[in-house]
Length: 507
Picture 1 (cartoon, rainbow, N blue to C red):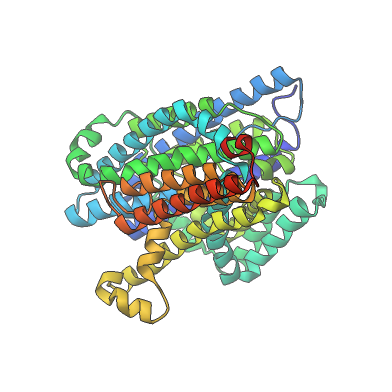
Picture 2 (cartoon, rainbow, N blue to C red):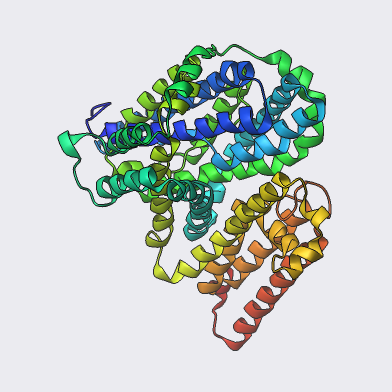
């Protein structure tokens, strides 16, 4: 067993640039969109984010070593670690931004984000107790289908837009990714595919004038370095500002541990069987460590394990990627890299991951479950579209409520339905797909239970509602209950006809 092999470089440049892209976007959101000062973004938050990802990469490399020794295999691929992309946007726009815009106090906004991360980390730890049980009872098509929904929207769609916005760089980098990782074509001098895509992107970006020396020199002159140190006081000071938002952190924490569970399932399908409980404990712990040192963003088993495995990554790629990322964030080099590497040269790598994960959802389950996988995608499309509409309206200085829901509906956009469908999308996708799987298998009692769970989660606002509470969406709750009644009625109708045996009815 080798801890690092030559093909790990493919995984390194893939996962590293994947995480680097997320941090570059994170930095832009915090500093440009929200308006936090550079000393907090580059000197405090990003080094702590780098630390949390590095800690995750250490533990997941350790898990890979254990699995390799246990199985005697040399092709084990470590679970990739990173920051959940949907969470990154949600935390910025649901707590850090609102607190900063309301108080004009970046310190309090940062502290409120840290409190939020602590809540999510604790929920992740609690999820470790039930995650393995849930993984055994939830159909694979439901888990992989909902994960594909995240992939096709947040992982693939936004990068695709940027690729086609600057096609003279984006399409060239995409062509290299397709050749190396989809077509299995060797790059010149056996260079890693991701590195070749980045090199070409940098050359074209500078030759075309997209990247400038003025921007580069300014970033070098304004480097803000930072070493992660415990940040207890910001949490205490920001607690009162965070309290009104914490109820929303509960469904997002649940979302996070379901995302981890789905990604562990995805890794098993690709050939590496890891402990769901251990992965969730690792995620929860590293999220809490990150929050302690200043990161408001939770860590998760990162999406994309099958893609990196197919690219040749084994054990060392995760550890080396986490280490390099940690060093770069401490040295304050993120702002410099933004002026050296065109982000559009990296984004095709994310598009590749989105394609691989979505493909896996369809190819790793029997063909008869394809409708369930498609159904799992729909809530994520609603959630992504809802966010896109809100961003556009906010940029125009208005909201959907101010424009008028009836006005939007008459124009062909049912905003309220889109919003309800998208809230808690990863869980909604799994519930809808599970119902479809059980109907396909004619397990109507299981379909009834799934609909009943949907009703229960809706009643408490975990899904189909922006806030947790009681009786948050009465119409949707009754809708799920009506579905449950239909299924249980049909189960006993079929039993009476003799089409189903007693054993099949309750199995």
